[in-house]
Length: 239
Ligand SMILES: [Zn+2]
Image (spheres, rainbow, N blue to C red):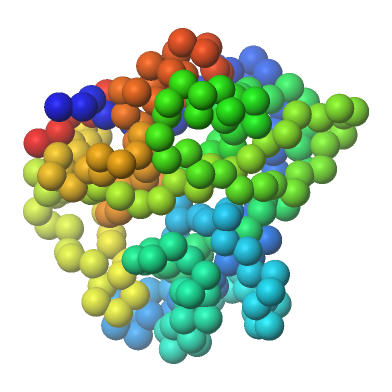
């Protein structure tokens, strides 16, 4: 049985280096005002940097974050669906295309914008050469202050696998049947649902908690061997 690790930003490195990236995706699905659960919301953790909307005639409708009625949200989602990976759930707030924004100062190999993960190009190539599977990355559009800036790509980390029901409190209601909103706060002691975990890749997000990024032992071993900075690991139990 493989071992799985919860990946996160290394706060100590962030504090030591002091660099920053301030950026958002060029396009995105709007938030939603849902008539079923009576909530206005937009999610984080679903992003597809490799999905390019530049040829879509309606692309300008994906530029401005704002809430929309569910029917309008659903119309826009259907316009994007053919361009997205098969089976992608595409919740409100899903981001597409390159991160556009500014960067400055000293940066680590892994850089995080909440749960968006950027990786320096040389580090990505080293991990691929080490045999880490399923690393998919899209371009970024960052403006740097310094000369000869590093090149960062954004990892397209798709949802696969789930938190085990045993770590979800029994009073959490099921997802909204219309908009899919799931009112789950992150468990203190997450457990992965072993039967749901992918076997074809070494990096993924959890389908029912997309801000949690999970890596396999193969990925973690390669990161440690290569001494890539900006990332921490916590092993999670599976059941
Ligand atoms: Zn809803």
